[in-house]
Length: 271
Image (cartoon, rainbow, N blue to C red; front, side):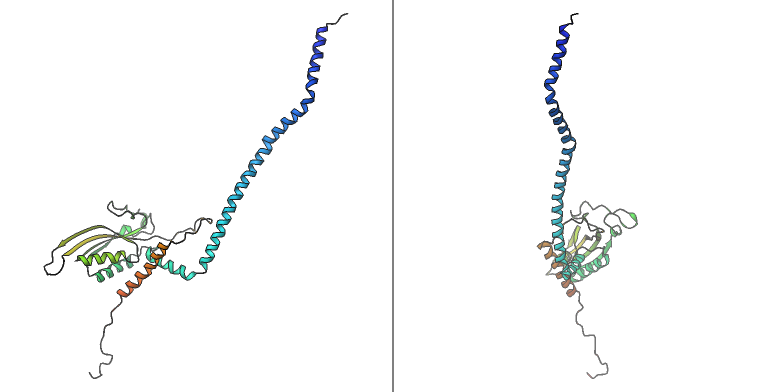
């Protein structure tokens, strides 16, 4: 019996073709497995290492900033007298409460010093709030007037409307006393009317009405983030604080009572 030669030769050729690539099967499979392991295992770990390296660099920068802040705090703690002095000066410049009574006293002293006559002082009750955004009783703070200065609205302020009469030079001295005082104020809604003086040798009488905004800001309730750097005072800010203490001394000297002879110490002593 004769078998077909074609089928036998095809199987033999197929076996010879497969056996020819068998030596490459193991290296190719190992390479494929290595690529899969590198993609699913090694590459994510490599990304984690890079992110940890970046985090370490950020931590080094934060540690350097904290070290610098600690040194600055140590330096400041060694000079408590200066800090307390600057705190008192800043409290006079921008008090933590509205301080309406002390402000009224300053206006009266300014009037007496400059020689103008106060006709009326009205305090806006809506401005007597306890915070910058809410007033007492939950009433929102009134919006600033359209004619007010640009700084109005940046901080809570006590609004006082003043009507006064006096000479023009005295009025300028009154405004200078307000601006050179220890507290931050702005004068808005200024209106002037003048009348010629019947007495010779002088200027006319000025009737003025102004709106005084005396600013204040409550103390912060939080200290901020730990890594926030300390804001150092500039030379201009230090000069401003020193000017506050100078203004306070000048005000105290101007408001001091003069030395007056109140009478004889002994009523029965001979003349």
